[in-house]
Image 1 (tube, rainbow, N blue to C red):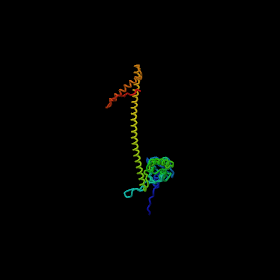
Image 2 (cartoon, rainbow, N blue to C red):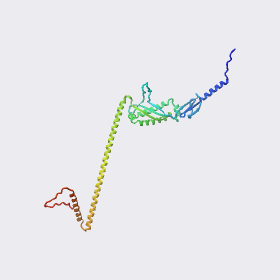
Image 3 (tube, one colour):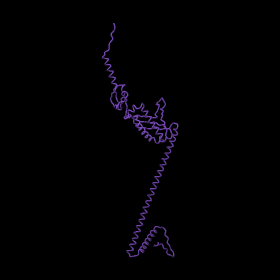
Image 4 (spheres, rainbow, N blue to C red):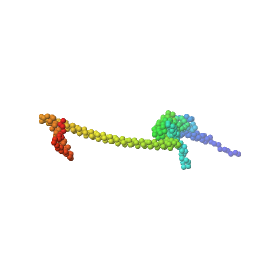
Length: 321
C-alpha cells in the first residue's frame, strides 16, 4: 500500500505567478529627488524631456534605466591635486601640480580649480556624449592654460598678472566649453598656486626679494619726490603771494603819489587863476613850500645836524627846473 502525495492547487500557482508579475512591474516605479532630474533610457535610447522631481514610472528593468543628475550642484575639478592622503601613519600628502612652459621658456607648476554645473541645455551631451566628460573638461582646461601661459612671461604668470590671467582663462574655458558642447557651464576657473620647480625655488625667491626691494626703493623715491614737489610748490605759492602783495602795495603807493601830484597840479593852477598870477610863479612857491616841509620833516628825524658857516652862503635849495 503506497502513501498518497499532496497535489498543489492550480489556483495557488496562478496567484504566485500574478504576484511575481505585479512585483516585476512595480520595479518600474522610481523617485527623483527635489534637486535632481532624471533621464530614462528605454532599450538604450534616451527619452525626452527629462523627468522632474517626484514619483515616476516607466518600463521595468532591464528595458528601462534611469540616469539622475543634479543640475544645481557646483562641482569642482582640480588640476594638480594631491595624490596621497595624509594621516598619522603615512607620510604627508604630496602635491603634483601640472607643469607649464611660459613664453620666456621658464617652467611653472600650477594648481587650478574649476567650478562648473551640469548644463540643462546640453544635458544629453554630458550624459551620453562621452564616457568621461570630466576628463574632456580637464583636457580642455589644460589646453587653454598651456596656450595662455605660453604667450605670457614668467613674471606675469607668477606674480604680476595672476588676476588678469584668471579672467582670461575663465573667458576662454567658458567659451570653448559651450562651443564644444561639453554639457557643462563653467562658473569659475582659479589658479590657486603658481610656483617654480623645487630646484629653482631659491633663485625665484631671490628674484622676488630683489623685486620687492626695487619696488620699495621706487616707492620711497616717489614719496620723497612728492614731498619735495609739495614743498617747492608751497614755496612757489608763497613767493607768488609775496610778490602779489608787494605789487599791490607799490601800485597803491604809485596811484596815491600820482593822485597827489594831479591834485597838486590842479591846486597850483587854481591858485594861479584865482590870483590872476603866473602859473610858473605859483608852481615855484608851491615847490619851495614843499621843500621846506620836507627838510623840516627830515631834520626832525636826524640826531646830528651840521651848520655851514662860511663867507659864501650855501644854497641848499633844489633847482626850480
